[in-house]
Length: 354
Image (cartoon, rainbow, N blue to C red; front, top):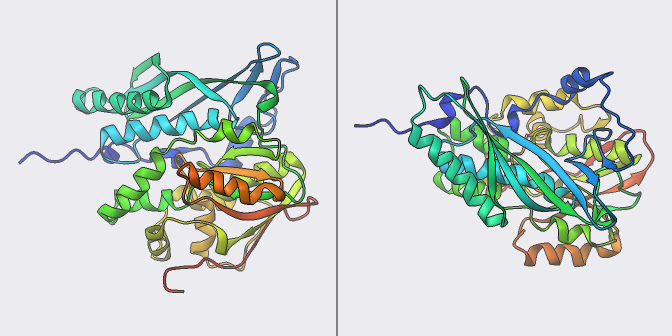
């Protein structure tokens, strides 16, 4: 009998959990000349935003980003779909509309079946077609571990660009997708995820954040980012530091994938969750049980949008998100004035037993 393909066994990590930890990344980038004085560069590397933005003219700004990683699931088509949706998310998170993508492909061609490589590409093409863009080319190498992702380009009106560094005091914080993706994909690799759990986490990871441009056209939406490899706390820290605000999170309001809660209580986490937590500074959450701390640091792959919005518009925005198919969208906290403790976590996670 032929042994089923286990794509995750070809790599040491998977998905956005492959990211270099935030603290280590800061050390690498320290003192490098990343800042640039070109006035047309609307968004560069200064606030760790989701993509670079370059103004072309009075009506158009070009959004450029790239994202790639190693397999997070075993099915090749699903891996391709997830990687493509994750890469396109950065364009949506800036308020842009994708216009084309290029493939980044690194494969162990002597050990991985060519049919699997073809299926990975097919999954990426499926999502690009869903987004209404061509996969217009790319680059490939022979590498010891499988790698797939995209370079993505998008367009937006310069006035509709939304950054991660423009939140305002008293803004509400809305999250559009549930947390727990890293926990559940780690359980998958260990053979401890149910079939229903796999179907649900796959649906979350492959749902495009295509509502981003619609949100960015609303003047009440002040800041946008997506939650990926640095976890909810890591990406919210970037918002707080860039915007000069602090934040309060309500644990009871944060949406989690249901199966992720029981898995997290059992101690199933990707290694990146602990690395993320150890790299956070300015978070007041020491009273939480460790498994809840790590859930807030859990790396998300193709996670949801984190939205800072005028509280007078919150109810209307949530209704808009739910109508668009983001059923898990919730108000999870608020921004506050001040830069002391960057993030304060209150409340407790509502587990199914509570």
